[in-house]
Length: 337
Image 1 (cartoon, rainbow, N blue to C red):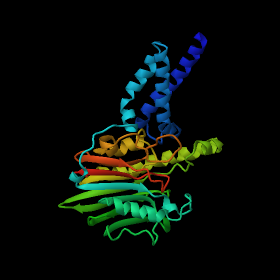
Image 2 (cartoon, rainbow, N blue to C red; image 1 turned 180 degrees about the vertical axis):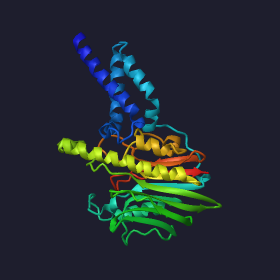
Image 3 (tube, rainbow, N blue to C red; image 1 turned 120 degrees about the vertical axis):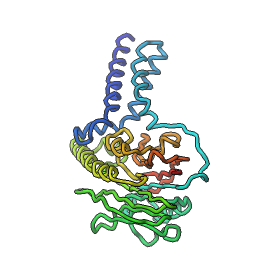
Image 4 (cartoon, helix red, strand yellow; image 1 turned 90 degrees about the horizontal axis):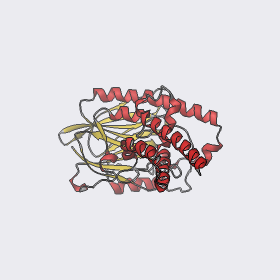
């Protein structure tokens, strides 16, 4: 048992070191060592493994449990980015209801064996009836129509590709709309300035570079690892450039602002930290509950879709949905300003 415990403690130390390294990732630019950014997605697993080590040593009444306990304590802010418990306020008191959803091209290639996906998404959005909707991986088709409830919209395609767009649907008039136009990418970011009562509110809809991976541990293990690492590293490097472009826009914005969209990265990443640093707060952390999973990736609760609001806003409520019409799940926030 003595030698077995030494081996267990060696593994404990390795996973504790990996977790400490992952804590530093938000402060390391994604284009500095792109491969490191992969650790962003393993943080839920690293937290769980270190918790299990702490429980193992606690059962044995061994002081070695302090290693993982201390590491987990240092990472408390990271834990609250992954799992939160919050009190909810009355939604009826909110001025704005915001919704963000990556709709995966409305099931264009029949990834889901259901021909009515686009109609179901359309009905879901109309039933939820938010004030402002941000859609990523959107496609304009005749059976998808929100015009009766949303008289204003800004839909931006990537060049001539009508199957890949960002869309902002609004119940408020759009005063101005801008395409940030990512270079060398099928992804993009846009914003619209909305007239809300007597105020102008800028709403960003962003979709950072996709990692182009199949959301399955089995599929990832079967893929050529060198090719996978190179592709993912390139994506992280592009994300860093895209986040910088968004940051430049945020720094010049004179209005109250909201950022919604699919970051294709976690709350533990440098791109999330950079964008959020412009006076924004995470609606999920303010009023969400549970793990807040927004992407369907086997058993790992990955959160890569966000609604960020100005610090001056009061977040009343936040909701994650479980409808399986895409590889992403929609998210919603009710706010006052």
